[in-house]
Length: 138
Figure (spheres, rainbow, N blue to C red):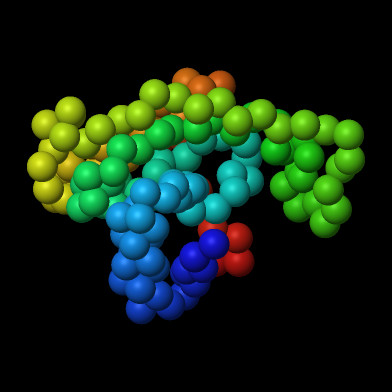
């Protein structure tokens, strides 16, 4: 786990460096592109950090739809509900180079992120909302 505190923008470069090292060593990194859990159960617009990492490292992005988490831990609940299950539905890897992207530009990050989010929506069955998710406590 590589913690990134939203309130400390200075954490981001160090976190990206750690992720790059993991990827360079052949590891796998899981990133939640919405930046928080969805409070309304819909899939919100993705932040572009995962796309930036894919574009700068050449690593493919594997979108994963996660289904059933709201039954396990509903929004606002303090305790996990036992006997419920979640499912992970992995998609096909998305190669930035195969989409024609060779560097991390604003346009490339947004297009790759939007491609990832559409695929996550398809895999999870969630309705997509073209707004960023509300960060709790802000």
